[in-house]
Image (cartoon, rainbow, N blue to C red; front, side, top):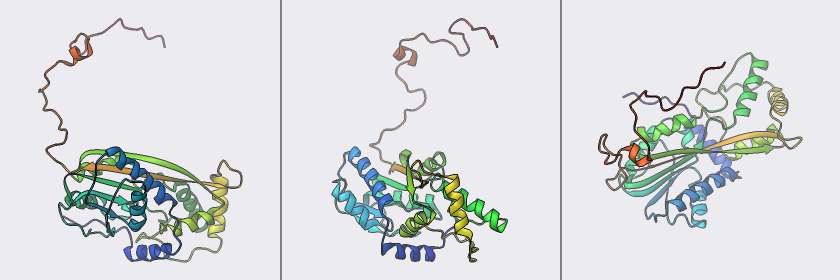
Length: 290
């Protein structure tokens, strides 16, 4: 089987994260961690062997411990291959970093293998609606100043596609949902400063490494302010979509679908209605008056 394409420059990503760690912007991590905390509390189970994967795993552990959702946890780098022993965990959390994986399905498979039967996998990462405004503005700016496009915002999956990753990874009882956050900034430079402080700037291997034209970002800032003003006058709007995936390592104790034909009662009886053959009319036809 061929290896997945290399989408991201891991060395550049490490440098960006190291720079961000000096003065991090962690507000989106806090929102995501609080959401994960609520999901863990709703599960109502005590996890004794947990791991948190991601560049801000220490921050996540502290938030989850403060909310009472989690006790001790092993902290793991979001490298292509995780340092996790098979069948060693009952909970593993991928903390806002899966969107930087060249092989997200492979990472989910590794997480499933690290779980004991009926162990829980939770992942949160940025979805396809994130920074759609910035993506549009940078494309318009490049076309205007350079006559072409180059990749500047990393590709992100859509929710309807991402849910299938759980089944491909062999996880049971899969659930996928998302939360959309509407954020405002004073201007485009303020947005870019936050992206740098989160270590979320462009590290795609196909990125254009040429210096940008002198007026590139001033032009982009003007287009952004004109195209995506916030409800608050003088500010711009930005979107962050957080996608949440949840799945369980298969176990015999989990709910299982019934075999076809094994029902003990007719659906019509359960609903208190009369069963009719397929295609039989259930009432008078209504004439078409169009």
